[in-house]
Image 1 (cartoon, rainbow, N blue to C red):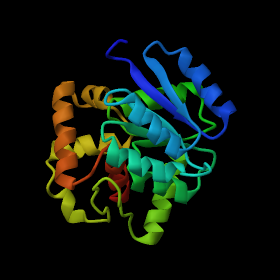
Image 2 (image 1 turned 180 degrees about the vertical axis):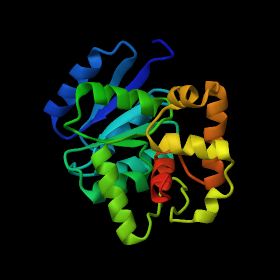
Image 3 (image 1 turned 135 degrees about the vertical axis):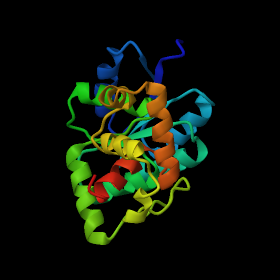
Image 4 (image 1 turned 90 degrees about the vertical axis):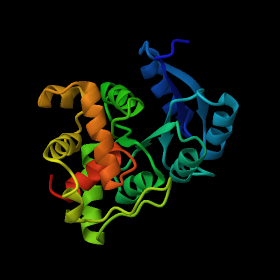
Length: 229
């Protein structure tokens, strides 16, 4: 197996849905479906069987019998920190989006996303970028504004609440990078916008996350949107 392949597990209680995703991904030369599961518990067991490095990304349904996708995501983030989770849901309802972020998901999409959007999201999440359905992001931000913030209980993430003073810690260039992250741009796109090398962009991204005490780019996007960037 080529080292640059993205090893993906499909988790959904409907076999027809898993088959559809598999058919889409079979056409991608750098994506390998390494496992399937019908609920969260089975997904955790399969990850144990695959062992370290056996899976890079889990496509996770939310509403499943037994262990649901939110609880499973929290367990994956805790037990398999190198595995990223891309949550897929039929409904752009607030509780699912915020639940996925609280649990440590690296992205979330609606199941009616086009195949090209799904494949792009997989590549983004696998490379460390965020992947978020715009409608879900909008609803989640509306909920956070109404509720006064969003706390992340899983994976050691810090509470995220509006704090304008936190932005003072960023340099002007780091602010530029944060704004572009909020627009959903990946490192290569930020590199082109700011005329910086990708390695320099990666360094800036790391500093932004560290200074703002954010777990990953998903939380950076939310932070930036909360602060009007």
